[in-house]
Image (cartoon, rainbow, N blue to C red):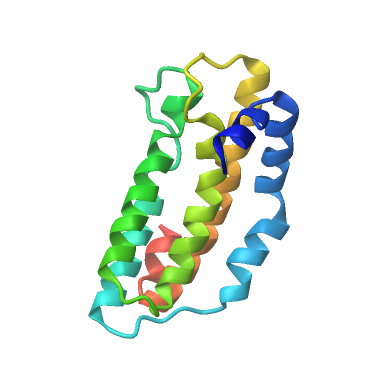
Length: 160
């Protein structure tokens, strides 16, 4: 997104639209459903899948130290983006796990672009929009984690 379009999307109407997009089943189906099953080809790809699974397990929601601002709420998503960049740098360009990485980067980029510069504590309406955006990311992350766990052989961890 360009800077100009980012400013336009900062309106409550645009945020509501993106929130609905993030929550829709169509986004998850288009990104994860089209990938089918994933199985690592080698140790490098297995380690990449495990790294992505761990990143998606721990950083989706703000913790107890959250200051109430959207910018702080999406810091975890920015950490996931960094983890994805690291994973991408360690895998060959044709590694199937990169399709999962790319889907995560795409889905988290929307709320990060919308909220990263918003340092005003949320009110009830903005909290609902922010929560919707984070919930959409969490839903996609759960789907990606399920694909990773199934193909990586650690599916029993998803049931805990």
